[in-house]
Length: 249
Ligand SMILES: N[C@@H](CCC(=O)N[C@@H](CSS)C(=O)NCC(=O)O)C(=O)O
Image 1 (cartoon, rainbow, N blue to C red):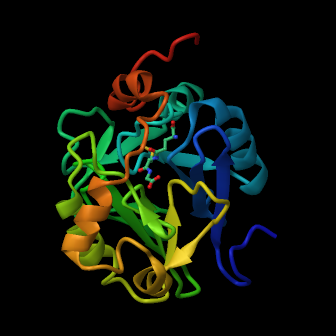
Image 2 (image 1 turned 180 degrees about the vertical axis):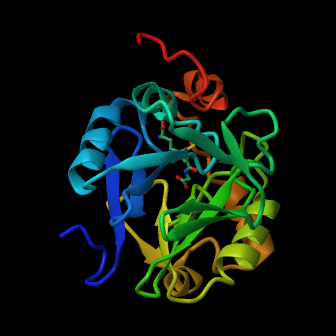
C-alpha cells in the first residue's frame, strides 16, 4: 500500500506548501520504520507528523534534513525536534559553516535510513551551502532531491546568500547532469504545478541549463525577481536549523 513501486520497501511521499510552493519529502524504510523528512515547512508540522504515523507501522523519524538554509519559508526542524526528542537536524557541511545543525554531512558521505542511504553532493550556486541528496531505491531507481539548485525547467536564483551563477552552472553540469539519465529529479519548489523530472528531460528541455555557460549567466543576471517576502524572518530563523527555541511554543 505504501510502496513507491511494487516490491519496493521505500516509502516516498511528496508534500506541498501552497504559500511558498515548497515541496517536502518524507522517505523511509517501510520495514524498519526508519525515516527522514527533507525540507519540512513549519506551518505543516502537524500534517507531516500525522502522515508519518499513518504510513509507517513503527515510525522512527531520525533526520530532518534541509537541502540548504531557505530564504522563503520557515523550517519545521525545530518544532519537529520538540515533538520527537531523538530527531536530528541535518545540513550538508560545505558552505554551511555559519549555520547550525545537529549533523553536518560532508560531500560524498551518506545518511543511513534503514536499508537506504542518502548521499550528499555539494551543489553551490543558489546558496553556498546547497546540497543535492541522492537515493537509490531497492527497485534500482535513483532519486535526486535537488533543493533549489535545479528546478523543473528552471533553477534557483543566484542573487543573494552567496549565490553565483558561475557555480550553479558547474554544480548542475558536473554533479547533477552526470547522474544516470533516468535519475528522477525532485526539486524543493515548483511554481507551475509540476512534480518531478529526470536528468534526461532537464538536459534537453531546461531553458537555462541546456545553454552554454555565458548564455546561462546572462539569463541569470536578468531574472529581475522580487526578493522572497519572508526573507528577513526566514534567514535568521533557518540559520539555527531547529536548534532554537521556536517562537510561540
Ligand atoms: N515569490 C516567492 C519567491 C520566489 C523565489 O524567489 N524563488 C526562489 C526559490 S525560494 S528562495 C528561486 O530561486 N526562484 C527561481 C525562479 O526562477 O523563480 C516568495 O516571495 O517567497
